[in-house]
Length: 335
Image (cartoon, rainbow, N blue to C red; front, top):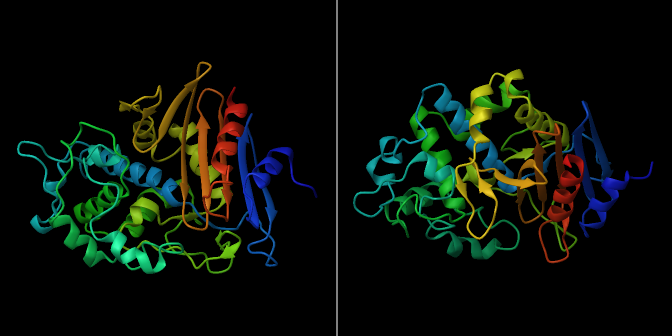
């Protein structure tokens, strides 16, 4: 069977990929379209194929925060010092404190990456840059980090900050991040294939410049980009955002969709991790993600009741227009 027209455009936008999956919900129906194979010459790509979703993980971390707040386990405005031991507390200017909300909206003042990561990343920079940056390195970095700006004063995208958010949630509950996410988000929403661990049999192989890569690992910052997922799981995840009251996480799902700040030099807003854009009187919420060998995009339009997840097993590079193409497909669905 030839690919659908929408899927064809995504395949063309991801040169070097061996697999592309497109999951779409619209007009009360949902479909998952698959193209290619898990690797060049490998097994066929199916709806059960798992992909690394990179920074799309951040929307899951934000939902976890919102759910723990809904359960009164913590508060969005809690200073992180409330939940962290003294040795794990970044320093901020006198009279200011980093809150959980700052971390979830990239306004903590923390740099994009933790101190020392780039040095350890060099040996595997083009394949798995986070692999050798361990939890003990992260803990050591926290105590010697000073925020660059007053928390809450400026938007600066930070993997460090989102990784710290997951670490803080784990510290506050006495549970590791993967277990916490499974218990409070993935299991209640029915996402059995969404996990920090590679799928044993249905994991696509990542590619960079048509060369296969080992599975991506991010041991110290899993909340920033460790998740793997499938087309059907991501579609269920998005449909939960479209109909929060049909899920056990209704309050949290509403919370993550509330705009928190205007993105500088843009008409867009930032919610809890999600980007929000108004187009033609419709609201679109979306997020993209990438590892060295994968690219992902998810988004939805509440007014139109539409949602889209697009996944491929090739990493970002100048000729890869996958995210832009996926966003345009979402926009066409919702307008």
